[in-house]
Amino acid sequence: MTNSYVLSLIALMTLAFGLETLADLLNLTRLNDPLPSEFQEIFDQPKYNRALAYQKEKTYFGLIQGVLGFTFTLGFLFLGGFGILDRWVVSQGFNPGLNGIAYFAVLLGLKLILSLPFSLYDTFVLEEKYGFNRTTSGIFIGDLVKAVLLSVILGIPVYLGIAYFFEKAGVYGWLIAWFAFTLFQILLMYLAPAVIMPLFNKFTPLPESPAKDAILAYAKKQNFRLNGIYTMDSSKRSTKSNAFFTGFGKFRRLVLFDSLLEKHTPEELVSIFAHEVGHFKKKHILKSMLLGLLPTALLFYAVGWVLGNEDLFNAFAMTGPSVYGGLIFVSLFFGPVSEFLGILTQFLSRKYEFEADEFSVATYGRPESMISALKKLSADNLSHLTPHPLKVLLEYTHPPILERIRALKERL
Image (tube, rainbow, N blue to C red; front, side, top):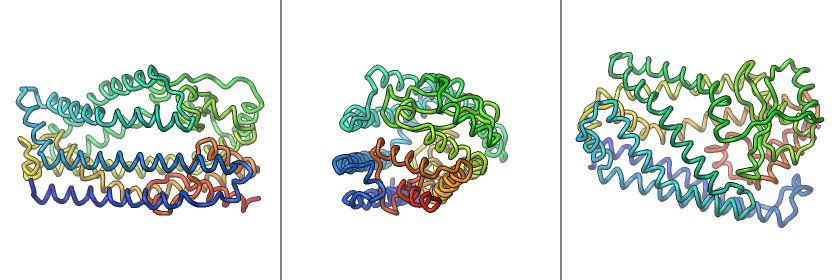
């Protein structure tokens, strides 16, 4: 099975995998750096050593997982797995729609089986060792079952809709399919907070407190519309902390991890909230959404092109062109390409984070609160304080905490 298409795919995959691996190996060299002076009042040396050990184990674990995943994918390609599965699906006598569902079901089932041991180890061994894990076996199994059911409930209609447009709309099938998929994504943004997220976590209105009063006072001052402030029972799974917005417009809610409330002052919580408001005020969310439309448009266009290229299907020993085959092949080729496109999107994301920090300081006027909040988050999550620049370039959506703190200190 050595033809130009397969060799090109392997070359792309190897390049992307090699770059990711290099970034991880270089990142390991930064785990011997001394404790930065900015963190000496919140990290003692034993805790810093623990953070370094945690990051080292996470990196080695990721390297092992990456190597095995890459090896399996190469083996599947060389053994003609995509063609074998296609011939088996077609032999069952299903209609084209069911062929695609069966094809994806087998591939996703294989992925689940292969990833499950890693997920179990990460949750119950690695995270447990460093005191983060609070997930019980019941919660783990429940989450897994819910995730699979959601994939079925949402995935089947989405695939059938995409397949219908490609098969019935001719040369404009890719454009109509892309437009319909974009509408579905927007709908999901509204449905997720109300329907999907409550399946996994309990959301409770934040009780009256100084923190709530301070957040609402800031929101009113900024004329920022907020549907409510909620706490999420994240501590039933992990001790790690975070905060985020859900919904848009009048449905917009602030969600605080319950572990965040336990460890941060009202001033720190308002600083975090102001940072998130900054993303909305500066239209970072909208810009990111619009930028994200381009890769999906290219992906759907590529599927349309692939469906007219029978040689590609022959290269992978498929029985003939199919929408599910087109989606698979484009995803395989697009995966490594997206790694390089991600350099741009992640650069913009890091830029937006700096801008949101500046907005928080400019409107709330407490850079010291934002700094202390960032320090606590990094200490509680055992963050890597001095990551290698290549790792940051390829993977970081947020600037390293140390860079953010030094930028904020300039505002003091």
